[in-house]
Length: 169
Image (cartoon, rainbow, N blue to C red):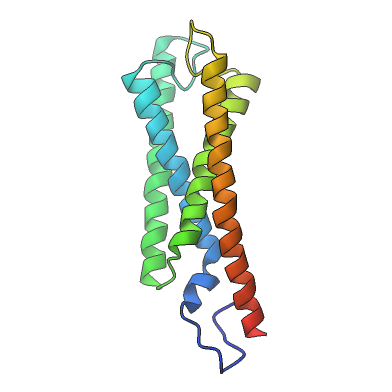
């Protein structure tokens, strides 16, 4: 959609990165989601032993759910890197747009985990046998800050897309 330049006087510096802007965003999203899920699994599940992905059953089921969660995080991360390799091959990797996707994935995962999984579904909590409120506040406020920073980066890339589109017309 953006690769054909209708105005021959305008020379595009990165014609492919605009054409593949959504793929940059999606690959970043998958990477951010996979990275934060991996950090959550490693730090809170394995190192600190605060919880399992699914804590409403036996420890064995909790460990199996952790393994499935861990496999999912690596699948998302590796899949995103294959997408990045394809974007680089096409000379279409747009780091800023990709970074916006990373932050959407990271912040979105934390907010989903903190609100949906912890509070609504109650499949696990951040930690047990302590006052949970400070943990919940830190978890969800951190997610919101990540998403606010992301919104700024995302809007910058959206503005570049708009200005590039107008340059074509």
